[in-house]
Image (cartoon, rainbow, N blue to C red; front, top):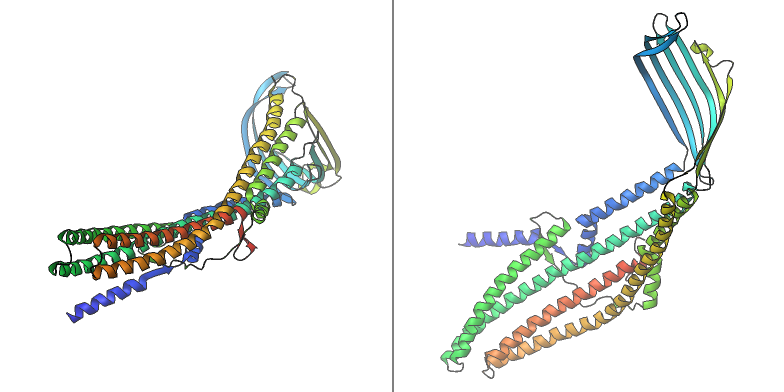
Length: 482
């Protein structure tokens, strides 16, 4: 018997040791590190980060090697034969190789591209008489440019840094959103844990009262109806305890799943005490921080710039498109490789292209009007979003300043309910009151404890919602991410 009792104690100790005790800040930290939402937020940010790196890379010179190591052609071609004065089909075979290297640099100021390249190619005709030929461009410098004023590089220089800044604030915003989910999951367990503890205490108290009530009934101090009421309440309390334990297990499982902890992890929640941060946050301060940090303002700027970019492009391509490509360099050809870089000839190329839509049935006009309307729509839509966010900030400030009062009242209610319950218990033992006032006091005590946990949850949820809207840590008085 002693051995069995020792094993039970050992298993109980192992269960306690395997528990992971967590307070609110621990749950928030784990959520922002390991939850699925945190992984998705990091993935989205890294995608935007590499997009920005690609944009920066496009502003740097690029070196490209283009090669065709070997190309073999065997085909039947039609050729004119002067001796017979007729066209004849001939079998033609050729071997071709090519290599070229190009150094290019985009020019943000003009929207064009300057390039320097070098090329070398080899051609061998295979037939009755084999003939080799080499062609080289040792050096060529050129410049290409879309005309009519549309400069994509100029718009990218305005939009891409803004897009990256928005990605950074979006990531912080998502982390703040995850913190809110963490608070809700934390207090779901905290409430279930408190209800389980209260149900256990109530069940034990009801069993004790039933024993006491049986003695009082035998002494004639308690009516049969009150004794039956105690028996019924004892049964209900036992069922409530079973239900509370099941609810606690579900809440803990949901928290473990949310934090992506091993499924066998046992968690225990430490509810923060009443000494919450005494923060006085003014509406004006919160609005200033929101306008400075909230990604909705960067989103508005980004969408407006993108809409204006589309309008600028549609306006300048409405009637015609034109481009120019100019290059100057040297080239040569020869039957032997040793001669292909001798006596170089100058190579000059100027290409000017124009595309004029004579009849397009209003396609370009429609694209222009669509882009113009889109600018007005973006202004209206984003203005409405900003107004809604600022209203949320004002409402959240009012809620936050009220929550501390509600929390204080909930704490006082717990103290009073405990005093009332103790008084009713004493009166019951002395036979001065019946069962009903005691049961009512027990329920009031449980309700006060639940309301305190809910008030604590509302306080922290409101605080973290305010952090999300402003991206500001009011406890440490620093911006999030610093």
